[in-house]
Image 1 (cartoon, rainbow, N blue to C red):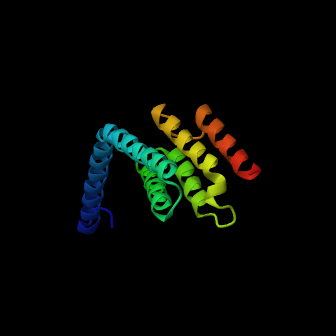
Image 2 (cartoon, helix red, strand yellow):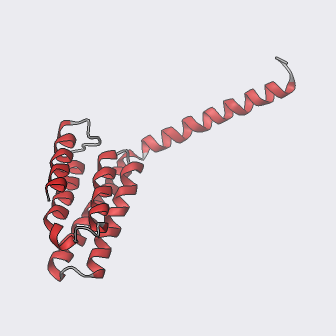
Length: 147
């Protein structure tokens, strides 16, 4: 079967697909600066939602906005190759959703999550394998289990 028109056609499609993948990878690499900008913008939105919650009090609107911003960062962290942001934003979403422990009692821990996300993004820490990422995650997990 080697050399048949079917195998040559398949080889051509595979080669074209490989070129498309390389083109897409290059485009994503070129967008790395945009990813950092998007991530910083979403962190600022999370900060603003938290500040509004502190100023206006805890209500359905303020907690809903905070949750939405955390959820956005949970998704964007993966897109931007910041798995540590995805993990912490996901933990923040779980904290807000936790019916066993009301958010009112956890507001300090909510702030700690937001501070950690802000610090990690500002310092370009992408993974928990990096010392600062590991340290902040360990501290937050200890605090979550402690409270």
